[in-house]
Length: 135
Image (cartoon, rainbow, N blue to C red; front, side):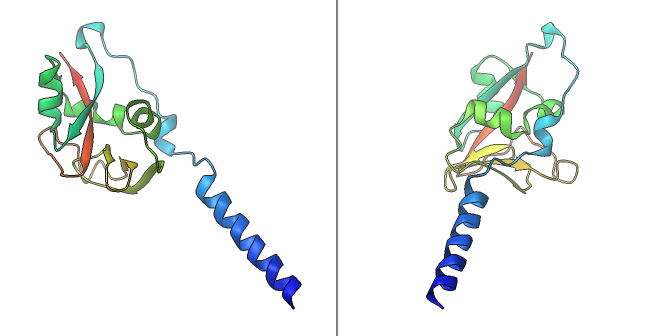
């Protein structure tokens, strides 16, 4: 029946639109951290493609702090630094994350930081790193 087929097609289309454009809540966005001392001079800096966090922080006269990586591993923090045109994605892991991926036009969150801990030294051809910098 053409009416049923049209109804199923419309339902499938609407589910797809809802899936693509609904706001996803990321568990890491709700995390809070104790304040760092003002002397820490904590700054969140976004790098250029193929740039390590060591270089990003050094350019600002700061040092990259791997121990602060969890503070920047969230969609909210990534979106404040990059235009995440395709949104955020928490289906990835790696020592280069969190970062903006230029191929995917997406901000990527490290979903396994214990197994794949953040590294200040790493670069990736298609990533703009988000770096926890400070004194």
